[in-house]
Amino acid sequence: MNTGRLAGPTPPTPPTPSYRWVVLGIATFTQATSCFFVQGIGALSLVFRHTLGLSTVQLGLLLSASQLVPLIGLFIAGELLDRYGERWVVGAGGYVVSAGLGLGCLASGYPTLLIALLIVGAGYSTAQPGGSKSVAGWFSPAQRGLAMGIRQAGLPLGGALAAAVLPALAQDLGWRAAFAVGGLVAFVGASVFTGLYRQPPDAAASPPSHPQAGESRPGPISAITDRLRSLREPAMIRLLISGTCLVSVHSGITLLAVLYLHTKSAVGAGSAALTLVGIQAAGGLGRITLAAWSDHHPSGRYRTVTASMVAVAVGMAVLMTPAGRTPWIAITDFLWLGFFGIGWYGPWVAHLTESAPPGRTGFTLGSVMAVNQIAVIIAPPALGLLSDLSHSFTPAWGTLSGMTALALAITARHRPSRPGSATGAGRHHRRSAARLHPQRSRTW
Image (tube, rainbow, N blue to C red; front, side):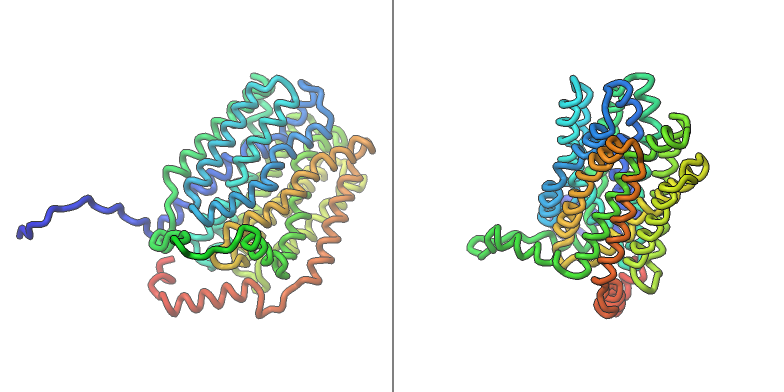
């Protein structure tokens, strides 16, 4: 029957809860494409050394250059994510990464390469907190560890692909071709995320609020002070200390593994680069496995991070012994270090998102990751300098092993009581959510 009304345009269909798997897939893909070239710099170390005559310190500075701007950019990215959501912030960052690598193709020498990688770092600032926030919003606590681990596996898996592709490409077509391919990969990842990502249904129903006219708002200094105050909580202190230690380990493995295997264990250049592929793949497997284990471990997610630090200390100790120079022992040990020294990040970032104050997930992710950036920036050139001055890798491995032992001792003193743990709070939240929203708990 005609009611006399004109049919208006059909509103877009909101995404269903099952769309979370699409979000997880594109977030993982975008993470891999954004970090593809940055994580592949270590695999290009021999190429840069032979073609540009770079020292180990200069190689470390290349890696640090791509991580310098995120020291501030992560704070900004976290605030933008809380205000405007993930879609355009992460997408824009990917396009900036692509532009920076495009500039690297035109670099006339080492200083221009550093500038290009500074631009890459500016865009890369959005990938880590943006991808983590997008996954955290779509998955319930019961599945968040596994989902976060899969998404975080994008970084080492992207590094593994880069280690497999970039050295051969640079050998055949020159290092500029490696920059060009890295830029193209980042462009594709940004386009996929911008085109396919959608907010979770709850967030779409209640978009971020903005102050209305006449509404009082805190001053910028007061707002920043209030937000940074949460970083003094015991859970945040543990996350900051353990994260700073373990990102240094990750940087050391990425920078020095190929050089160590080639010069100390007499492994061929091709086999050493292939081992880095295995290290990154082991790291991706570790991020998924350790994060999934943290979903069910009765002592919470941070116990998994602690176990990873113990495993890292053991692996570093092996490299400082004569047995660590035996090729098969060295390769096996680096795979062990890849699994734990890179895999720790999955449960760590899941614990971080669950420890964030309500409505401040983006800022908390950005600020804690920004503190980690200090270690990411300092560790590569510092470890490279230790190796150059001593003509040995033992001081670098000893420094990383000592840092890990110190972090274990300090974080043990900041262990929260069981009722206040993030895991306990997450379980209470799940039980409450199940009572209030039984249908959602069955669907999600």
